[in-house]
Length: 379
Ligand code: HEC
Ligand code: HEC
Image 1 (cartoon, rainbow, N blue to C red):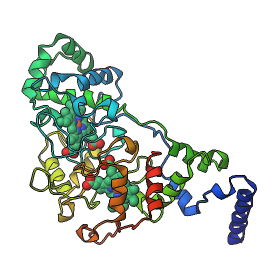
Image 2: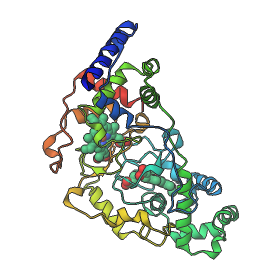
Image 3: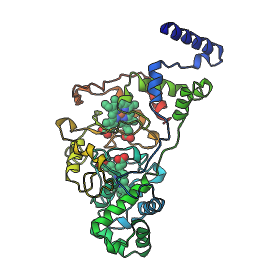
Image 4: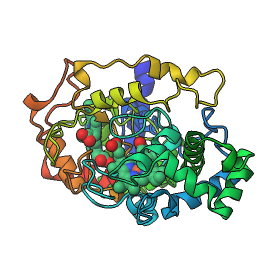
């Protein structure tokens, strides 16, 4: 009975398609494909304040964080700011393969968006919360080259910034320790960055039309993108790692990108990220977590390094991906075409497959490559 009904709907679908003038232009999706497509939404997501940051969602802190983000006040030389590398006109990235502040950094700048959805931060997940990840560049000698002492001294001597600080943290910086000030600035920066959310895209409109069985609206979505989407959820198996509404499972994997650093040496990837978490005073397990229950720290307590973590990097979100090149942790792939070609002709022997076998060389045809790119461009 079930099959009969399904078969009947399928034939009805064909009749409809034939009756419409778009007959030959229509893609049909199987039940499985449809379910996979629907899993990549809805968008925008519902966001709640970060319980580990008591000023998350606080409008005064957001405005103050926005100013800090743009100001050169946090850089030792006063020549750099967060926007040196996270330029709002470049999707909060810099368009470079490898980022550069005081000196060259051996990783690609991550585009800042939809950060409230992250569980880990940085290519290696070296932070388990956004305020800690915002402190890191202040201290990194290659980025802003600052210190808690420097930042605290500057803040205490700057009357407008001191007043802004007091309006949020209820005390003048003269009454706080250097380290408390550094962490509080990280929390204001985090409150601001949480407000950067990517808009709805043609893909989101297509997904909604599909959910509502609105064929007319669905057909506004380019056919090449529809074919590319079929590859993405089907034989490309992209959705296994690039999951859900934000097109990432938030965890770490090896996508076959080299892990030799351009400057020499090896990028330890997630292995190094776990080492950073173990050493950091600013994790969810530490005293700066404002959530009294510390529940979110559970994931951090349970991470353990293993051999498998070598060469793993965080699965990036694909939202806005046409704007965030060059790609991969080391910026080694310049265009989306390069990325799709990479997946099409992977060197399988180089992958640490660890028996999971998620990635296989796809050997896509010329048209399939173009279709997959067309799809990625609608995100
Ligand atoms: C010299 C360039 C540079 C500067 C300056 C810089 N960043 Fe970054 N940012 C990077 C790079 C490179 C990464 C990737 C880091 C990694 O994984 O090793 C990154 C990653 C991040 C992330 C992680 C995003 C994610 O999805 O995991 C956040 C958040 C961030 N930066 C915030 C800031 C803030 C806030 C400032 C200013 C206080 C700042 N950055 C200054 C280059 C920079
Ligand atoms: C096994 C998990 C996995 C699968 C399957 C997978 N990816 Fe990825 N993807 C990753 C990881 C991990 C990275 C980052 C790798 C790095 O930087 O070393 C990445 C990076 C990317 C990037 C670069 C994004 C950026 O901002 O740098 C794109 C684009 C991408 N993948 C698209 C795809 C497509 C298309 C497919 C299917 C053909 C796919 N991925 C399949 C894990 C996966």
